Amino acid sequence: MKEIGEVEKVEFITRAEIAISSVSLTKRILRRVRRRFELISMTPVNREQMVFACRDGRIDIVTILPMRIIRLYKGDFKNIREEGKVIELLVSPFRDLSLRELASALYNYSKLIDELIKKEVKLIISTGAERAEEIPDPYSKAAFLEVLGVKTDEALNATSTNIAEIVERNRKKLCGKMPVRGVEVLGDIDT
Image 1 (cartoon, helix red, strand yellow):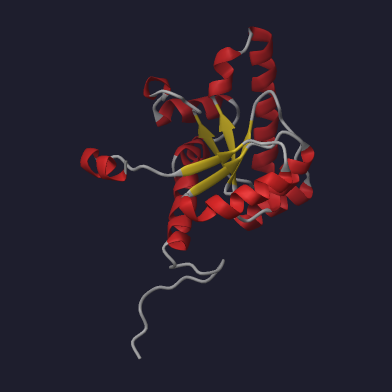
Image 2: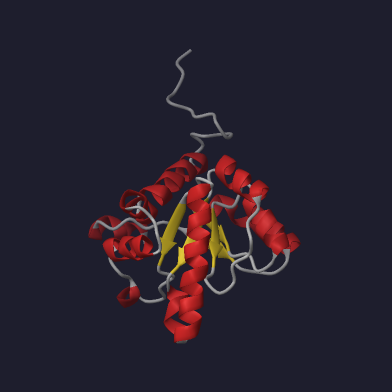
């Protein structure tokens, strides 16, 4: 895939998405997959998983679905900021909703976004697309966030910069240039 990406001038990013209900199973999976993927995301389905996803340093992205928003508390926001994580909002679930459910989902995301902005937590917006035809351009996704109350510059960051920073950091970790958090190897030391 990466070779095809280089030829086509498209950057591929490997990502593992965890969406299971057991925290203990999640821990076992994370032990096996962390070094194989550039991004790890988790979609919590209950409060226990949300706490784990916000706290565990191996998870980069906490995905929140519009019809299943789990409340975030002060400690969760603190952990997300300290660990350098982002909250991901998905667009694809909106396709299957009735008008009433759509209105409710948009309201839920709007309230969540207000809270994220107030707590200074970075967010990203993803399509969750299963086919290439379903992927909108970044400006459409940014415009969607603006409708939900995000400022233009923050909306554009949510489609590019916020995730690019995490990918860059994780690539450094994977190739050994960042052995531990806060320490980066800048070059070879000649003795």
